[in-house]
Length: 503
Image (cartoon, rainbow, N blue to C red; front, side, top):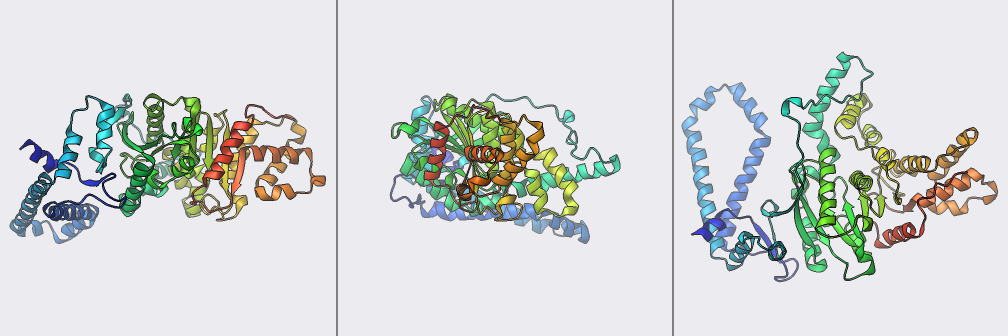
């Protein structure tokens, strides 16, 4: 009887790894399959009802609340029938699972006591199932949050120069816009519909990571209570480069299953991928504070559970993932920071795609709630860093495909000006002009510049730009080849990043 009740309320099983071909999924018995369709359909209808509830309430309001009174018995019969059908479906599904030996083996593995964490995880990692039921095996100490009455969403103000009668409405609108749709526009991967659309690719990517690369899936709990879905591929026994761990931080619609993990893995490095809060199996929402807590948990897991020293960890951030990667780099003594197709600051990009009449509202949203100012954080990092610029980038260029408007240019210029300050104030303007001029040029064109026309400022600018940035001819979302990543790592290993080249 205990086993039956466990089958009744246990999670959906998607796949038993290495049980058949890679595209073979778990095959439920007919009873389980039929009942599961009913339960899934009911869940979908409930979600539709929740999303359309404002329109339903509006309809009831216009018709008058008497419409509920007139149809109360019909409504009771309807919802009562739905409830009975759901209860019967759960029982039938439980019976189907109870008589399926493969599912019973899965339940026994999941419900077994965790006396030996290593053996327990080895047992459940044979299965792919609903992630909410995955046991949390790495927990960060919780952080105390301020009392509810002390939380003031209007503490920050990006338009403090405006009079109060202008400031206050903008702050209220920014709060509503951020929580209603703004954050999800910045991080589309946090939308449930995106996760559902990508379900099959995510499932196939996870299967490949586990079956071909012996990936180890783990659930982490952050200091703010979110749970983070991670995947670790260990190459320490397969390659000399495997002693280095590359922590991969995905873009705003990126998932570790189909993201940038493949690049360092193919180059022979160990890799650790994770999904942003609110993405796929991870809980929460990708606000900057939750992003920081998430990457902090990932780093602590890498150090304390996977036994990598921070100086053997490389942070690899793609696009908006550069924020999390840079935060980790300034808080841990990592080996290096590699930023691919990353921007300097979210605000110029956000203002570029929104109507100009919304500029004050956009500024308030970004600066008060989603202040992804990577360039200011990068100035606090003193270790090796390299930027990869996409020459045909259509996302972080203010004019799609025009390299001179790529926000990565501003990131590398700010980095160079901060790390290599020009001490001759009389010629500082000439130096900055040379830096701006050469950073806009493609890397492939720099060797063909007439050396006879070059000043000492041009030579200095070209040398420093080549040190911190390389080009890759592609659009924003094309995966970075392992060969390019390897060339970046070789350059980092052979370069001296601590020198402050001054004239």
